[in-house]
Amino acid sequence: MADTQVPVKKTAPTTAMEPFRAFRTEMDRLLDRFMTGFPWPMMGRSLWQEPSWDFQTTFELAAPKVDVSEDDKGFKLSAELPGLTEKDIEVSVASGMLTLKGEKQQEKEEKGKQYWLSERSYGSFQRSFALPEGADPDKVEAQFAKGVLTITLPKKPDMVKQAKKIEVKAG
Image (cartoon, rainbow, N blue to C red; front, side, top):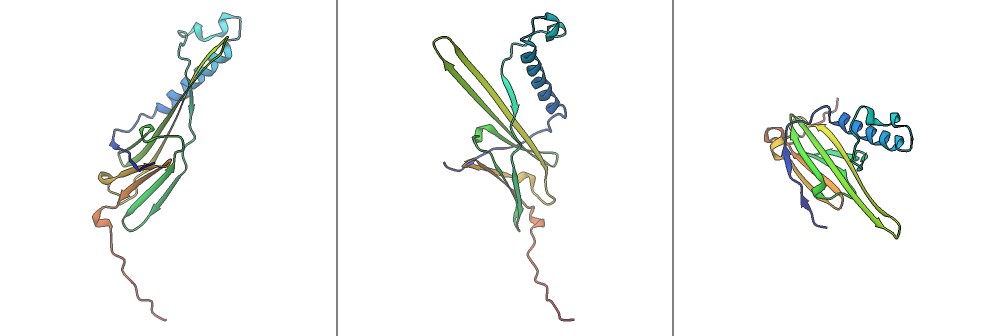
């Protein structure tokens, strides 16, 4: 698998309500599945809401483990993202934050003599990191290879300093 460039976008920060919206959708889906078996119409959501025709399953992917390192030239962040492709990943920089987003979509279709099963599952994650002091947000680069996303944050030129050797004196 060849190295693939992942575009880094400069975007406005996402709304603070986004995680709650996903939680609400998932809870509605679970309640719908639970209430389907009850014969009493008053037990369903139909009393206060239109019935949902969205049968897609949503779930959250575990947030990826991330390794962060620093050297003289900059910072490096590596995240393992097995099963994803570069098209499933979004890297953005906004308001001093670096954000990783990913989404995995899986579809399964199975046909038998007496049945037809079609399932869709979606999972997503999002992690944000404060940009380290001295990192140049205009020169962030992202590479994706063999299931590992590597983000390079070069230091601003004035932050890259030559090491000065200090003489140690006997006292």
